[in-house]
Length: 269
Image (cartoon, rainbow, N blue to C red; front, side, top):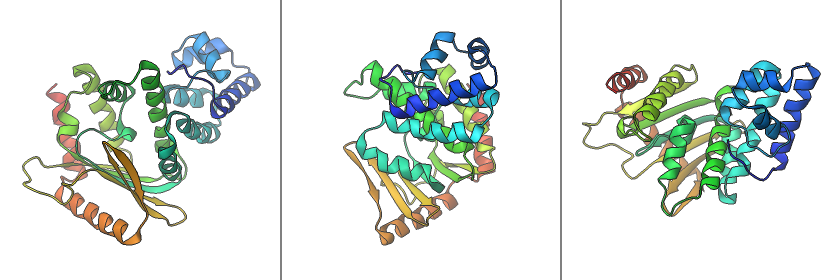
């Protein structure tokens, strides 16, 4: 968990955890034991000076109840760890009824384990300092509350094979990452498809992209590159990208075939 300057969102989340804990007469020791953290770390979260991990957020919701309220507030925590230009995307992601993503090199942040995210960020050049890495890891994990959100959004991913075979972080981190993928792939609202490595060409060779549909019927695309990222709102461009995504889904292995492939890669580790 990241040790960062407390934000309003962190203080609000911590205050709610403390309120629910004391209202239910749950001791700090019991909450810490349930979440697998020290008393001092939990106390720092409750006072808003420590960013909670996704694991803590979920474990705290288990014992404290009020899952919907805690998870909704936790969604706002990710805003505290990202630059301004990314905040528009985060707002759309939080309000999404559907997200469809194609990734060519690494798994998308929504599917990464904490250890994978840390390894990916540690490989950045120029080097990111440890404090910033931990802040970004915590923010990435906080975004994953989308999996538990109500109403449940539809999430689909088309991934190149290298995203599940490259052992980012080493064998143990890679194994845990594949186990996480297998878990997510079996959620009813999630589909993961792997692009066959022997396919000579497909419709998204010009790079990764994400499509977002919101409950107010906005349809946008997000494209990220090494020297900048942008949201695309032009209806014709988004429509073209939506058609492209439909084509690559048809070109990829089915979700069932992809699940078996991930299982095979995991067994070979």
